[in-house]
Structure formats: C-alpha cells, structure tokens
Length: 162
Ligand SMILES: Nc1nc2c(ncn2[C@@H]2O[C@H](COP(=O)(O)OP(=O)(O)OP(=O)(O)O)[C@@H](O)[C@H]2O)c(=O)[nH]1
Ligand SMILES: [Mg+2]
Image 1 (tube, helix red, strand yellow):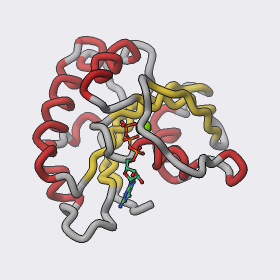
Image 2: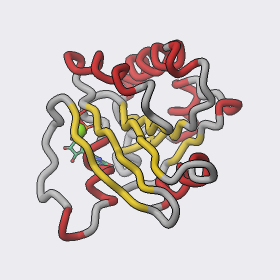
Image 3: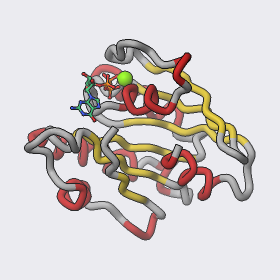
C-alpha cells in the first residue's frame, strides 16, 4: 500500500477521508494499478478499458480513500475536470513505454495544472511511471523530465513495477 500511504502522509494529517483522482492517458494502467491494491478476493480477473469512470475504496491506517478511476480515452477526458474541485489528491499514471504519447500526457498534465480548481490549491500529486517491465520503457527520470515535473508542488514520482 506504499502509494496510498504516501498520499495519506500528505493528506492524512488533517483529514480522515480523501477523494483521489486517478488520471492519465488510456492504456497507461490506472485500473490495473488500482486492481493491484485490492484484497485478493476483490481483484478483477481481467481489467478492461474503463468506460467513463469507476469508484474504488481503499483504507490505510488513518485515512479512507475514495479513488476515482477515470477513463483516459480522449472522448472521456473532459470528465476529469468535473472532479477537480472535490479531490484532495491526484495520481497521474504514465505509460513509460509509450514514448510517442509522452507529449500527449504532458499536454493533459499542463491543462490540469492550469485549471483554476487545481492551480490555486496546494494539492498533492503523485506521478506513477508505469510499465517499467517493458524493455524499451523510459526511465523514471526521463518520464519526469518529459512531463517537466515541478518539485515545489509536493509532487512525487513513483516507479515501482507492478
Ligand atoms: N507490461 C505491462 N502492462 C501493463 C502494466 N500495467 C497495465 N498494463 C496493461 O496495460 C493495459 C491497459 O491497462 P488498464 O489498467 O486498462 O489501463 P487504463 O489506464 O485503466 O486505461 P483506460 O481505462 O482506458 O483509461 C492492459 O492490457 C494492462 O494489462 C504494467 O505495469 N506493465
Ligand atoms: Mg481504466
């Protein structure tokens, strides 16, 4: 539960419940990552592309998380911003092996960071450089520099293969 513990560290000191928005391009592995954190009995056998969004609940020692697993498909990305105002944390998942679309991921990230619901708040963001098991995947450092990550926003880059 390392990733949620990390977010709990940032949001748990003041709040007992937190909404976490899980975003990133389609096929980046958001639902697979969340499935990985579920208890054995609740895991899906097969993860399929998300339609719209789905809601998952997780609990760490101090904080109950509601994760909004958003679809990353182009036609659904405009749904993300409807959840900005009411989220206390964001996990941005990147497919590190999808070099061609790193620029698209950056574009989406820039739009997110410029959104008034986000830019005027200090909101913890965690970047997950996924698919590190793929041989030609970019390193987490490369993913970070492709996204132009800003350390002063308390953003963290995770790169644990799942
Ligand atoms: N090799 C590899 N494949 C992964 C990894 N994580 C996810 N995948 C695969 O990537 C594909 C997409 O995973 P999803 O979890 O559905 O991706 P998503 O980001 O939820 O996609 P949308 O719901 O369409 O936005 C699936 O075939 C997964 O099995 C990983 O770490 N390594
Ligand atoms: Mg999904």
